[in-house]
View 1 (cartoon, rainbow, N blue to C red):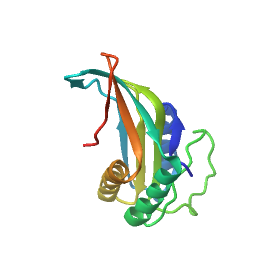
View 2 (cartoon, helix red, strand yellow):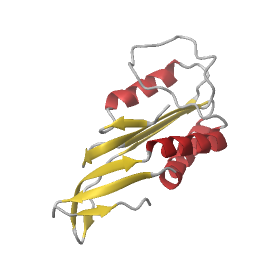
View 3 (cartoon, rainbow, N blue to C red):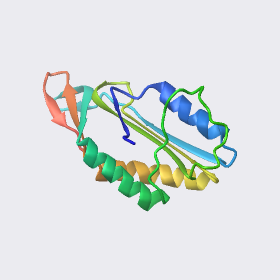
Length: 159
């Protein structure tokens, strides 16, 4: 499954992930990360948005590889209708992982990324969410071009 969505991350996607994790009686800890585009100030101008591009196939392969390494499986949960529910999560591997990354223009204040992790214990949820975020930033070919109010741009460097 691809982690990519066109445009920014819709809050309904985040709500769906939380709802699904709340319904899973095995989950005792959830950790969520929602990235937001900031109006950073650079000598060249102030950021008005970020235009994200990616090599989708390579990025999805990178996500699969680092998830296998970090969580022991590469299953990324679907994010759909928050009212849809199968009722039985016993066949879903723990930790449960939701990842979505927006492509295209994401304006300041909007969210290009969310990660949700559900585990049996809170410490594991915190640790895995952070490890997934860092791996995504360092291993997946996803690029951000910061658009500036000066009508220029600057390639984003992940920090």
